[in-house]
Amino acid sequence: MKNPLIVNCPNCAEPVQWIEENSYRPFCGERCKQIDLGAWASEEYAIPSEKQDEWELSDAVSEAASSKLQ
Image 1 (cartoon, rainbow, N blue to C red):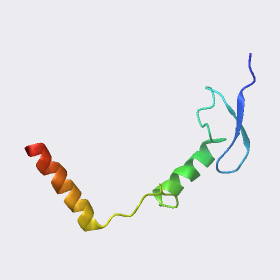
Image 2 (cartoon, one colour; image 1 turned 120 degrees about the vertical axis):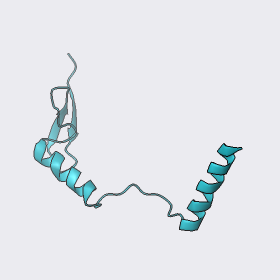
Image 3 (cartoon, rainbow, N blue to C red; image 1 turned 90 degrees about the vertical axis):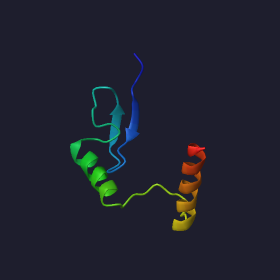
């Protein structure tokens, strides 16, 4: 059998086996999983995107809606 992939826990950097039995992967355990979830919930992490002007976004939605009605 092949050796399992070893990854570092994104929170504490402990080595973790990437195996099906590890329900917390890629985290080392429940604690690190919850810490990461809390960071997302408190908006410490964010997916980068281009900031759009509110009016541009509104115009784009209006145009998309009107084209579907035609």
